[in-house]
Image (tube, one colour):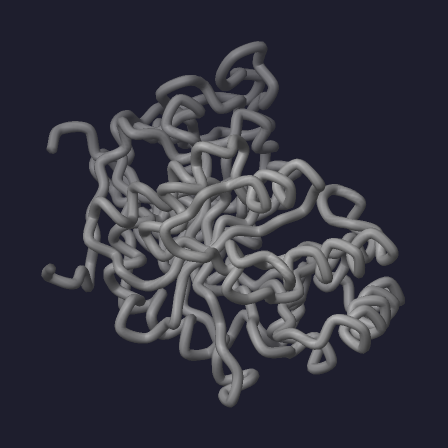
Length: 362
C-alpha cells in the first residue's frame, strides 16, 4: 500500500452488535440486513461472519443475493424490494431466496409461474411509509390469494417503520396498531422492526426483527442516547498528514478560501477527499482526530485531500488521522456534513485501501 487512506472493518464488532440486537427479543428471530454491500462494510465478509449466528439475511435485490450465494452463503436471503421481473423467480425458488411481494405485478407473476419449488413470500403492508406495499383492503385480498397458491410455501407479514428513530413521534405506535389489526385477519408471522424498532420499541418486536445500522455500530438515534454505548463501531476511516504549512492571519485555505486564518495557524494536509467518499459538504469545524487529539476540518474538502488545524497539537508529517471510527463516532461527524452515518458508511469508494479484521475462513 502506498497512499495511506485506509478503511478498517472490524467483523468481531459486527458480531457483537448482532448479539446486542437479538438480545432485545431473544425468543424471536432477526435477519441481518446486509443490503448496500452491508452498509459499505462488505456484504460477503459480514455474511460469512454472521452466518453461524443468524437465521437469514436481508438484501435489497437479487443481484445482492446472487453475490452472497456465489460466495457460499447458504442461509435464507430475503429480497426486501422483491423481484423486478418474472424471470427472477426461477433463481429465487432454486436458491432458497425469500421475496417480498408489494404489488399486484409480483403477485400475478408468482401465480403464473411454473416453479420447481414453492417460494417464501413476505407480503408488504403500507402502514404509513407510502413507498411500497398494499393498502389494508388490498392486503387482505393479496394474502388470501397467495395463501391459495401452490407456488407459495409460507407468508410472513412485512411492514416498515417511518419514524422509529424519533421516540417522540406518535407515528410508530399508529403503524404498529395498523399492522396488528391486519394480523387479526392474516394470522402469519410478522416483521416490522428495523434497527430503531428493535432497540427502542418493544411493541414492534414480533416474530422477525430486521436490524441494519446497529449491526455496524451506529445508533439510529440522534444526539445522546442509551443505545450507542452498547455498540462497537465496525468501520474506521483513517489516513495521514502528508504536508504541513505555517500560515499567517489573513491566509486562506483551500478552494475559494472558505476558511481564513485569524491567527498564526499550523495546518496539515490529509490524503483523503471526496473521491474517496469523504463528504465534500463537510463544514469548517467538522471534528477530526490527529494522533488521537481532537481537532477540526478547515477549508473545503477537495477531490483527493482535505486540511485540518494542527495548531497546538503534537502532530506533523506522517501523523495518523481518524475521520470516523472507533474513537470518533460517525454519528458525531455526520451532522457536520448535513447527513447521517448511513451515507458516510456507504459512500467510501474503491480506491481506499481496505483492511478486514476478524474474518471467517471459509
